[in-house]
Image (cartoon, rainbow, N blue to C red; front, side, top):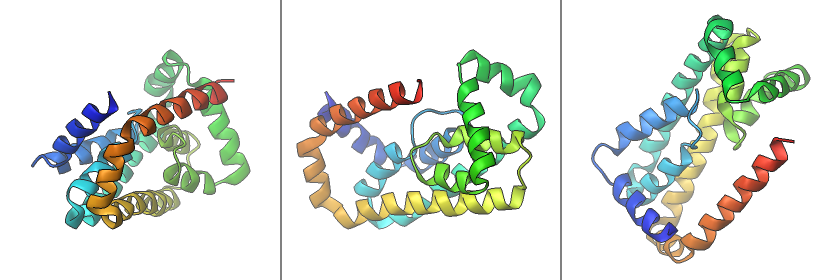
Length: 191
């Protein structure tokens, strides 16, 4: 199952419009999209390693632009727009947890959320809701997102064709492992 999907993703990654798809994905992932940008960035950097840094730059820029929109939604449209949406998907507890984390760690929460697999979108909206200072928000997002995306692109560029062959060989095992981890994370965070 994952082998066929992997081959399809590699075809899409080499498509002439792939950079536009990456930009759109990075933008909306910072606001509401559940699929991480890395899912598109990694195969693109692997498929065209000479363009890896360019793709990482696109992902970083558009992710931070999306984060700005998420921030503005939390800042200006929390009650009329965002709060009802958050309630409809059952994310009230996640926003409350994000608020607690902001109280505990301040700006470091944005860095952690922008660099790790923690849902960044929850923190972009919450930063706006809490009226976090905009310039530190932007700078921290640029640093965290840039580090993450350039690391992914660099690993793919470094691995090249050899890594692509290895991935193809283990893609089914890795796919099921990721699903298992996602299910475990869901149950862990939904407690």
